[in-house]
Amino acid sequence: MQAGKLRHRIVIQQATVAAPGTYGEQALSWSTFATVWAEVKPVSGGESFDMGQDRASVSHEIRIRYLAGVKPNMRVQFTRDEVRHTFKIHSILEDAFRGAEMVLSCEETDVVASTPAGGSTP
Image 1 (cartoon, one colour):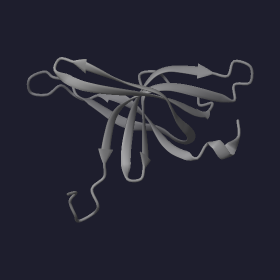
Image 2: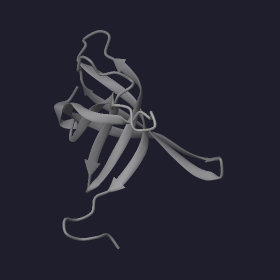
Image 3: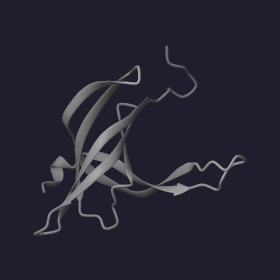
Image 4: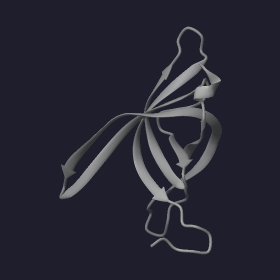
């Protein structure tokens, strides 16, 4: 793996279930598992029409150095140009021979533009 390709800073997060609310509902809380350098690369995209809603899906490969404990039930957050992208990890491919790297196959689930401090977006 070439270090120069790992130019994106990502946050890998794990979910914890918060205490049940008044009506017994459970909420997920996300905490940082690791912050690492990665190569984030879109590999496919598509659109579908589901229950009256247009739905776009973008699949990405996120390549990182091997990191013990990363699981498919985690998510990745990546901020670029003040836009935060959230990815659901679908699968993890590990380098079986050297154990040097991992490829996270992900689907983008959320995109949020940051609001400048003290201002609002038009």
